[in-house]
Amino acid sequence: MLGKNKNAAYGDDGREKVSTLIGRETTFDGDLTSAETIRIDGVINGNCTCEKKLILSVDGQVKGNISAQSVIISGRVDGDIVVQGKLELLSTGKVAGNITAGSLVIDEGAAFDGRCTMSSTTSSGLFAGAEPEAQE
Image (cartoon, helix red, strand yellow):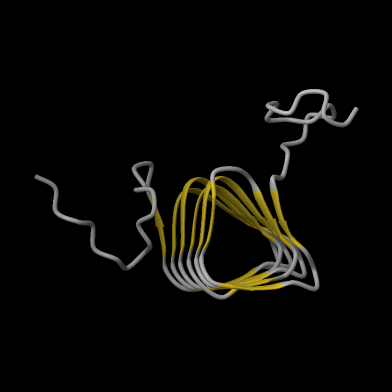
């Protein structure tokens, strides 16, 4: 039922809830930040930062950097990706940029043009190629 448990992280069918949806005919210009899961079916012209999962559908495009806990890519990304957990590049996915991830799965047919660094100590918000700030 709708509104049954508004604070639940998962729906009745066990799938993770999507709190932000960018529709197929939508273009968003600017940086997008969310504490919850994002699904992108349209176009984002800017950086995406997500504290949970970012899902990029077959029709989705991101022209900017992505930083998230986990990422599933079926569409196109032109930018660097930093993922603390797992990045899945599905067969229809295309990435032109560098990837830093805890783990990486690339399906047959996917396209990736860039460098990949796998690290279990990926820093949140640190895009590949950027230098970490000095800490005192």
